[in-house]
Length: 199
Picture 1 (cartoon, rainbow, N blue to C red):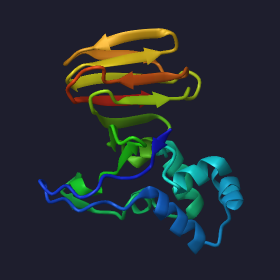
Picture 2 (picture 1 turned 180 degrees about the vertical axis):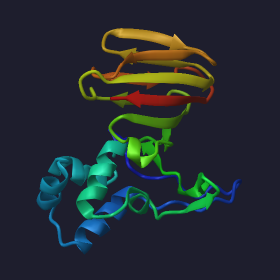
Picture 3 (picture 1 turned 120 degrees about the vertical axis):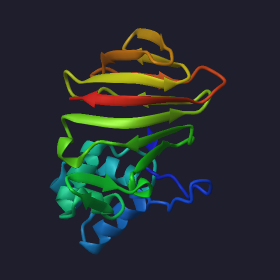
Picture 4 (picture 1 turned 45 degrees about the horizontal axis):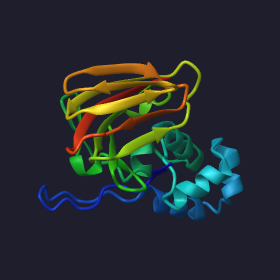
């Protein structure tokens, strides 16, 4: 499973660090005097998953974060770190330091959540960075789900069910996500990709 912690301070870019989702969830739940069982009932997210998220041991997908924000009565941007949006004409801007990031427990994989909140459960977009030897493992998503992986730099191996393919820079892999699947960096160099999940 993935760690729900968010990226820390980036000195080179002088970015502020967004708050961690696990402690944020724990604080909001306690503030509303909800037990894990109570929040599980209100959100539809299992008690065990909630516990893992609060401890930073599970991956809170965009769909899960949406369900939790609704159950807690808070807007999704506020839930993941406070709304930092500017309106200029009709362009919505979110500061780089407030784009939430999810890391695997071994910190080898980083997923920046690019999707707008109103597309949750339909289309999820992530900027994915995987260190050499890193691997992003996922259980089966909902029936009919697909993933589109476009490699921006480096080379990645995709596994979907019993099928494996190597995806080089500039190539796109489309595969079933309603079976166990994984994305692995088998090379000695970091790799970057755009990951789109279609439910």
